[in-house]
Length: 562
Image (cartoon, rainbow, N blue to C red):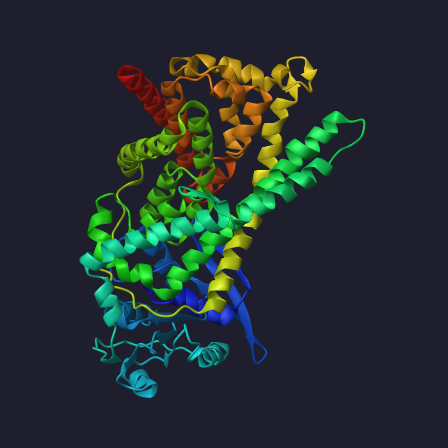
């Protein structure tokens, strides 16, 4: 049996999906699209049931977004034995409109979720008789009604009908959602959540925070072990093979391993907020504010998470409603300096400035990034188009999360990252390592005779107006692998010693350039999965252009005032 789950955003469709299928989840992309649908299966009384979780459909009678049209077309024309229309008390009018549309020609089951918060006044049998299709009440968060739904799907339940236009009364209340949706409450609450989430990511994962190093962070604990393993990869008598193992292959493997905590942490928070309905409740209260930037409240959350690591934040954008909103959000996240970049800012500022000025100097790249991001957003909106807003989506009820499902969603998201991006990161890392051991004279163990050095000297005129020697600017190419690689290349070419000789204007210009000149290969790969290769290349060119413009401007302004 094959069933598709359809419904408006924020009705708990994904939670029902995970309740039904557990861990057997994969992503099936629509032909020629970066948009995907989750696929899973379960066995009930000897019958295998495949379940497809389709993107959200809010405007069933008049789809406004390409995602809606695609999901609706797939639901109506796809090879499904039936459709499960998932509803919730706060979007009952939109859910019934979707049921009326699909039940005319497709066998449908109507599932009303969140009945632990607000339950229909009529029982299931009376509601089924009224609507003409099987009806089942569930609470995905608490597991109520899930076993009955599994049994119905295994039996091939569903019916076509002309569904009447009815009003469904509920017993219970959604007062928490109404309270949080008030702008006076929603705006400070959302900002608080954003900052707390970012601080949690920096404190627990990266270890570098604005208030000093964290004693409990995961990455600083991992790095000595990764370095120890790398130092063991020595082939006696073969320096080239040793370099391949250490700086090529193991560098790529360790890069993937260091991304995993970021990805898992961001996946956890996204699953947690989806399960609680908290962001959905706040969304309607701040939508007017964020829509001026062409972003949704969820987009703002992902951008803040991007300050820890861009990769999982971009990957998380695939859950956003609307193709344009998803694309614009993903394109904006690389402008948020990630935690490794923050570490570079501190190193550069500490080498040039007195200690009391370091925190102030570190803020400069973020200020430049905000200005550049606003400029880029205006350009991206011309290229991508202004996102379609969900028409007055009611606030989502707030509820306790189901921790098992939070864990399952976190695992699936992390596994998807490893499966889709790890080989790309490893392959490109090795590919970008090659110019450091090959030069005009062939194989070289002296990096100053390599093609990397040749490229650095060739690019020197572009950085000379900022007062940057090639021994420093060459290290920027390592940032395409991972921003920490910049430090290693600086050390190899003597750039670390030269940092102290830079003027304040040159140091600040370098920090601004580092803030957003290019995403690492993992970020670019994640971006390509969400927006496609063409927009990814456009984004990379846009970042590089803005980086030069703002770096030159920084150098000129600081020199002028100094």
